[in-house]
Image (cartoon, rainbow, N blue to C red; front, side, top):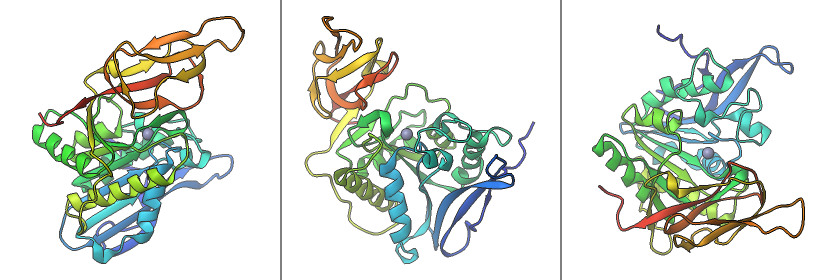
Length: 338
Ligand SMILES: [Zn+2]
């Protein structure tokens, strides 16, 4: 049975020339607003023939590096600088960002676990559905900016995924490298089925994702990486003119071959990590200790690294619960190509 059309209505014309700032309006009916709408900001810039780039952030509401970078870009990118079309959605999941949370303040939905979405589902599934059926089909290349949010801190990287279509994979990897973060990664997802990434890649589009820091805040260093990366992405795919800017120092390539990269906690307590982000870890090293906060005189639980690599992500809050990812160790490689 075919789905009904999306309940979202845009206030911009995606085919009109020049620059427009508007909204993707999704009807809601709540205690605060009986005939209301979720208002998702959108900027569209059209200038002549060329590819379409879809730039997104705020897929998770507490990942501020990307949100800030795209809000700034929407204020500064001029129509005359663009060849083709740039669609900017700085805050995909507005109800999550409004609540200062990863997930929606309206229906609790995790947008990046809600794809391909459903026009008859909750608010979060309706947002996902609009991207899957309306915005993604318009684009040739897509960039989705994530970071660790409040519970993770991540060494800034851009990434592609292994894909069945080797040409699509190579196109995406080219953008991930050109992004110019300190690290470029071939990323392994714990569960890819309901990701935006998968929804975009399954339509044959070139797709780059990022993780640009975390902790639920921004720093000057990470904002510089985010803003430079977005500009590099647009240059690499021919949307704007300019010279690619490289990261300071040699860019590091890392691979995540399988789930053993993820160290997940089997205990609750107080977390002490033995390594900082970017440090080299050897198999067998003590990577973390977890202390019982309810008593003195008990030895901590010790976690050892299961593989050699570099620490690319860590839990940010010091308190840890069973099942939390406490560290991610990725393998340093000479090349990410097949
Ligand atoms: Zn995210």
